[in-house]
Image (cartoon, rainbow, N blue to C red; front, side, top):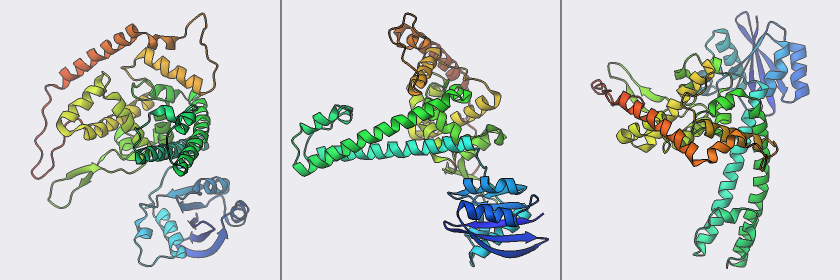
Length: 409
């Protein structure tokens, strides 16, 4: 079996072939489809292994080369220390190092998502970028108002009718022109965001796991879809701790020699957007009754709200692993709230509205105060039971020199 190492760049890839323990330089080929397929046809055999680092064009390279070889391995560039820390670093050496690491089974690999998961990740990334651009434009409009001693406007100024409200303000001509330009760009981005949300909703309707995660009170469509896109195949995580580590929600640990382990801040490694979505869901859960809210407030009393939000996000990651692995919904689901979220999902996907129909749908129950009060009372009872359950817990005394950590975080 041969191992082919590829050091991929923007315009070319350097090739090194490891055969019977000997590495030979095989030149380079251009980074375009025809050149990649020509290299695969002339050089590769069905018994070969190809290894390359994860880059922006890795996915398409892997899909082009996979039919020609036994396996394509993707290296984690942040963990290939032999390359990152090398004193002598060239393209030929990097390609040869990748081949040797793979042959020695020391290569830190990353998972290659399917085309479906790759599409989901692109949609999430595009939506995140649009939301960031829209927030920046809104802040620029507000800064113009602030510079002219005008009160901060609410969301009404950003909508379709907000342009007339903006034109009525007494702004200098140049600043009025800039504000209107930002407003028009905001409207264009809002149209694109609506199209992306529709695509996300249409895919979510076909995914039972999206509905399953939405049974958690603070998890909406965007959070559920973003987390699932980051996770991909849940079976690649053998334990909830593996998923927590993948999302960067596990605390960093420093230990050397006879000194006890020191637990610091979370690692912030892995899928940052999914981690942010779980933290956002934790903040949404805090004011609502339920066991997760009780956990949030229990930690916040000891360590503060910021730490409590991260700890609750970690708790959510563990919960997500169990729900997806065991194919079970959240035990403390609010039925009316879930139906309301599912109906909003259908409307976002383009389903027709049923307003004015003779038979109201199940989502209508959420608009009834009596139903909402009943669900909240049920969750308050569950929260009371949780508080009673943890009331007798005692924190372990930390080892000498170690930093104490809150129980349950």
